[in-house]
Amino acid sequence: MHEKFLEKFITLYKKNYIKNRESTELEFKEKFSYVNIAKYVRTMSSFSNNRGGYILFGITNSPRKLAGVKRDDFEEIKQERITDFLIEYFSPQISWEIGVFCKKNQYIGFIYTNESDRKPIICKKNYKDILKSGEIYYRYRAQSRKISYSELIKIIENIKKNEIKNWLETIKKIEKIGPENIALIDVYKGTITNQKIKGEKLIIDEKLLVDLNRKINLIKDKKTNDLNKPIYRIDGSIKTANNILIPDIDMNRDYPYFESQISEKLKLKQYHIHLLIWKFKIKFKKKYHQSIKTSKNQFTHKYSVDALKRLEEIVNKYFSDEYIKKISKEYTNFKKKRLSHVDGKTV
Image (tube, rainbow, N blue to C red; front, side, top):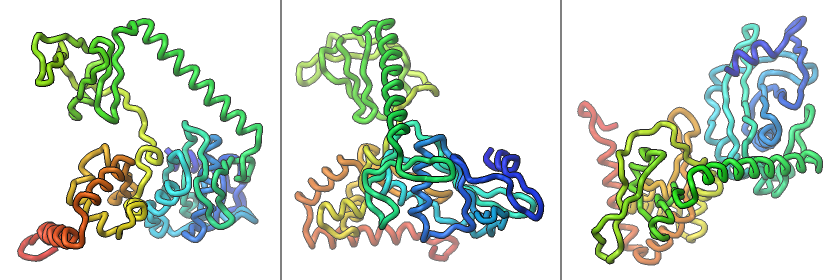
């Protein structure tokens, strides 16, 4: 999609000079360098707060001329470094893509940033004199800079309009169904709350969350559980539904910690935290852990507030030098087993 659009959009004339200028949706760079990553993400956040846009690599800015990039070098850019930088310095999460397209036998690299549907994107931390905590960057014509009052007000007004629209749509649905027939599903904790069961919570098996029908009937059973509480059953079948909407997870809000940050908070070595995460299978529970794909074969891992609390409990209960040595040995043996023999050779 991007390649076809950019191929038509970028216009050349006489000796590879580019007719297009930098704009609210375009910025030109001669080459990519990790040294300038803070400047790139500042521009990306400004695009995200406006209508989205492209940083194009392989174009000199003065004069605007097609210089090109080495395709293999650009495709080997470590996307996880950009993702980690964005997550560390901006919130909410910024959606972006990277790629290469060919123009007149020259390759142009691009980073495309989507317009955010959760504006404003806000800078969380200082970085030299490039990024400032609390600032909001906005893309103006050929310039990424701190947002002005008028654009900020527009964003705030749009947030209010969308909230009112969503509430009105929700109220209409409730009115149509009837408040007494509404059940609230907490997809994070896996519970249903409904007036018919008088404030008691129905625990949902995690596997069923994706298979719930839109309409369910809660019927009171004659039996009670061990605590003498009434038992409710779902009347009807559960069929696989492909169109159930699950709210977006904000990785910065719901899973704010890297492993290194947890080690800092618990004042332990990161390797020790890594061992405890492995030993107590923290990564196997979505309540505690989410992974973000940063490239074809690489992921970065984020942990929730609940994960921090759980690890704090584990440390208080189990942690000692002797215990760490024990699970370190278990972990080493586990890794050796994974490096199993293939055709008689260790891999």
